[in-house]
Image (cartoon, rainbow, N blue to C red; front, side, top):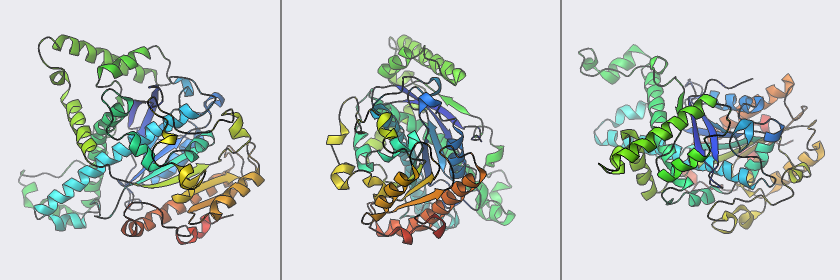
Length: 472
């Protein structure tokens, strides 16, 4: 099993040590069934242990990713350092990989913020212009109390890293007012640049679904469309720029460009993408060098890059929109295996400039290890025949998390192994995720109204999740 052709390939620097991380982004196809999450749902899926062949091309990553795409999520996958020829090498502590995931986490926050902020502003502008009635009937309009949903997922080693991610507050604090030429700033700019394509895609698909009937087309566009004064948008499946994969490499700052140049000799699974990225960086540096004698560096930047930088500054001034968070863990690794591959070191977020474990809110200070897995909705799917973690240990671990006060943790136990090769296990994994996502989506509006800061209110999992995904 594999994912569909990616829409975007790009790189971001890791906040741990600037190592370049290969990332892919996939757009979902909108259907009537996933319209409630289309443009509102975002997901990250992390892959298994790189030294054993794990990468973002892993079939279980593809299995989970396809489920999320069908439910309307914009999907992000990435390679940990050293995976499949990517830059860097796998660590013995897991801390660099945790920072790698946190880097993608930060990218996702900026990316969804740029999309959500634009849609909110567009809706407010439409209401001011007296077009609120049309927006109210547009299924793509943003409800005033709704917030985007971000699913943090991982399989095997990826689930171990996912389960130790810092809090939303810690990640937001890490990217708060980032310094120029820092990895955090480059991640913010890259997210703003790519969000423009995402916004166009979402708006196209929303318009296409709204205009599915001749009557809807006449009501929305009026007689002016027939006279050439105002024409409806091109449907997404006919739009040439939204379905060809886009490769994006290189950075805006000189420091970041030099960082990429040092990595120009590395091997990558996407050789053509890397070559194009390096060519862009070299061209950009040569343009800056020649333009510095005649004009300011800002004028030498492409127009879209300048817009991205301005949008990043706008996001820095304003508070980032706080999403709802949820977790998906597939075949999680527990001790002793988890200890062996991390040399029994304590997983905590460490960056180039700070140790985030000792700054800002942290899960250990708030309620113990794995607190995020009970604070937010979490689905854990594992097999009774897992060769890396015993069935008994997995059952005890999941029972302990479900027993915590206010826990939103839920688990599904199947008669499968670690690698999900049997058809029965695959079906249960698929159906379990589908049911859990459906319940999560249905509960979203009520939770948004009752919980302004996005924190859990101590509800029992029985009030959130379907029977099929009930505890073991």
